[in-house]
Amino acid sequence: MRPIYDKTPLEHLLAELIRIPSINPPGDETPCAELLEEFLSDCPQLEISTQHLGENRKNLIAVLRGTGEKKALLFNGHTDVVPIGERSGWTHDPFGAEVVDGVMYGRGTGDMKAGLLALAAAVKLLANRDEPLKGDIVFLATAGEEVDGCGAKAFVREWDMTQFSGTVIAEPTGSVVVSAERGALWVKIHSIGVTAHGSVPHTGVNAIQYLIETLEKIRKGFNPQSVHPTLGKTTMNLGVFHGGMEPNIVPDNAWAVLDFRTVPGYARAELLELVNGAIAEVTAEHPDAKLSIELINDRPQVATDENDPLIQAAVEVNGTLGRSTAIEGKVACTDGSILNTVCDTPMLIYGPGEASQAHVYDEYVRLEDFHNSVNFFYELAEKLLG
Image 1 (cartoon, rainbow, N blue to C red):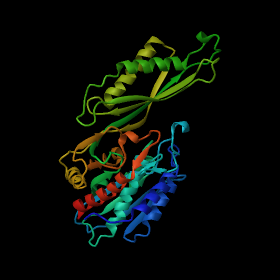
Image 2 (tube, rainbow, N blue to C red):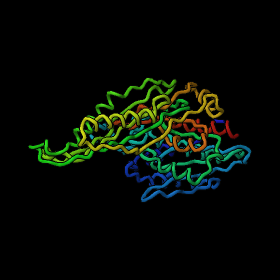
Image 3 (tube, rainbow, N blue to C red):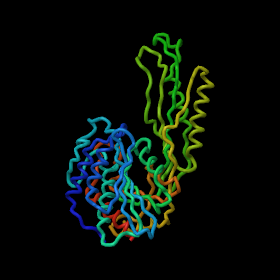
Image 4 (cartoon, one colour):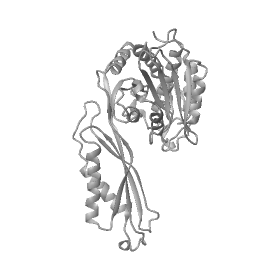
């Protein structure tokens, strides 16, 4: 049965979460975790704990105990957000939580504080059912998802993932059921040169020049042919480039980071071969080039069979809510690439907010979709554990 609750206080709490600038790096997620802890703490049925991850960073965990007749279900979302970019690109205050015509604007509205709070609200409502669920629900608010997954890594170090029948991750999907996500491979390429005066560049070794030549060879060689039915092709983005000191100095250091989002058939092995091959070519052409690589993010692609009970239950619940019964894929990666690869736990991604709104100016979430997600997570838990 669909839960009844007062929507206005929950919307005010969402606005409070959005107003917390938990930008990663550095993270500073603790105020978000504490606000959620305060929201859940008046529910005596919940066992609440934290995992400290460093200065002003922690995970929040709340456990709703069931009868133990069924395996537990993990509800997950993250508290960190990406930087806002150029402030001039925003027409709404990125941390203002402004509401216009039923739409809330701000960094983290879609990715993913609305989904995170929807999970927490559903758990709190489930705790007040007349009958206990047949399995535990573990609510996990992680820090660090946007960079290194430090929160998810801390959780799997201390928790037995085999106890879970599935993981529900409330990333923005436009309220569509998602059963798969791309992998992520971030490759940092270092180039070391030798400084010289800019008027006599031939007396130095230009680190930027050799890095550019390497990146160009990678760009020309990048040729994704494998197509996943829901995830599409592997992509590449040159996300960071640093180098040089002054125009009149030959740069002795430069580095760049490539962000590959991978699907089977053109993934880790092929991409590393491409990058190492480009470095080998540049080094052969320029013996004074010194190039190396560093993997700073390496997450596998994750997929759950569309016939798995978790996915099928999600489709049925979404249908009863008048939403899409399609099953799609997510081109970005989530904490599921850490949580679910430990023992191949089934994974569902579902949440309010459009995936296209993640990491953009004027990020937003429709409040109707936010409340729909509260109902979805509540009914999903009842269907699986009731």
